[in-house]
Each structure stands twice: as C-alpha cells, then as structure tokens.
Amino acid sequence: MNPSAADWILKFLNLFEKKGLIDAFENDQKFYEALKQTGFIYGVSVSALPKKSLGKLKLTKEELTKINLFHALLFQFFQTNKNGTFEEAINDILSFYNQLEKGKTGFFQKFSLSQSPSNTLEHILSARLQSANSLLKKNTISLLTYALLYLDVLSYKHWQKDPNSVKKYYRQQETI
Image (cartoon, rainbow, N blue to C red; front, side, top):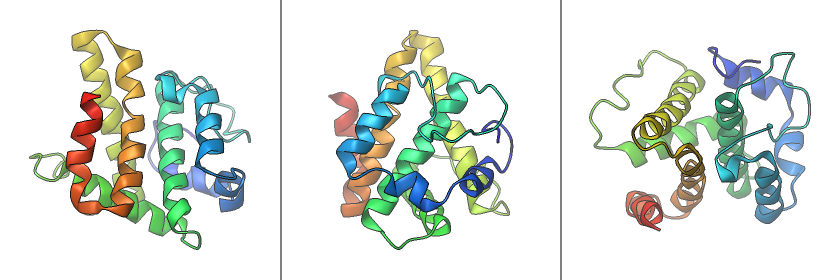
C-alpha cells in the first residue's frame, strides 16, 4: 500500500476492519493522544496510526502524514455515524472538502468527474499536502504548515455539527 500511488485509499481500507481503525479508540481524547504519538499533531509524522503493517515499503513523512490525515477524518466520521460505511465516510469527507473549498476556482475542477470518490479524495488529500508544501517553500516553516493540517480534522468535526459555518470556523482557527 503506497499513499503516493492510485487507489491507495481502497487498499488501506482493505487492510483493516472498521473495528481496528475506529473502535480501538475509546473516545476523541484517546484518538488525539495516539495521533500525537505519530507526530502528526506536531507536523512531522514519524509513523502511521494503525499498528498493523502497511506493507514492505518505507513510507516518507509526507505519505505517513497523508495516511494519518485520512485516518483522523475517518475517525471523526465514525464518531457521529457509528453504523456508517467506509463508502459513506469517503462521500461525507468529499462533501466537507467541497464546502470548505467552495468558491476557490479550479480546486475541484482539476479532479475529473469520472473518477471514483476514493480517487477524488486521494487527489484532494495530496493537494492539501502540496499546498502545505508550497507554503513551506515560501516561508520555510514545514512543521507549522503540516501541523495546520490538523485544522482539516477540527473543521470536519465542526462541519458535521454545523456545515454552514465551516469556512468561518476554519478562518478563525487559522488565525489563532
């Protein structure tokens, strides 16, 4: 399973049951603590949250960050949708990113409409890391920039409760 290759999300989901990815954590706080242990919260993922082997490849920090971001979004989905499916989670996360990026010309237009939802989400997650990388090149603040990816998770959690105010919430969190 290589997060830099196509269809990595489906391969990732095939490696695990929902129970192993989500139910292993009692609550938000336990999940946050585990995510902190990976380094994701600090902007440097040194491991992936799932402890099961993800394959024989040595993953880069960017690939580990992509896995942890996706896992964190999945966890938030299942916190409010206990009986949901992985397919529903992917579609819900896509709806969130659509709302968050609504009005930004070209963001979603660059992803083909003929792609599967999981492929579209793969491209969006890559774009989120790339936008973090472009900020890094301008400001040389990679830790801060990658740490800001956790705002996606916090904003998604907020979006699940109040979809109409997610853009305002995201902007407020960015300025803190």
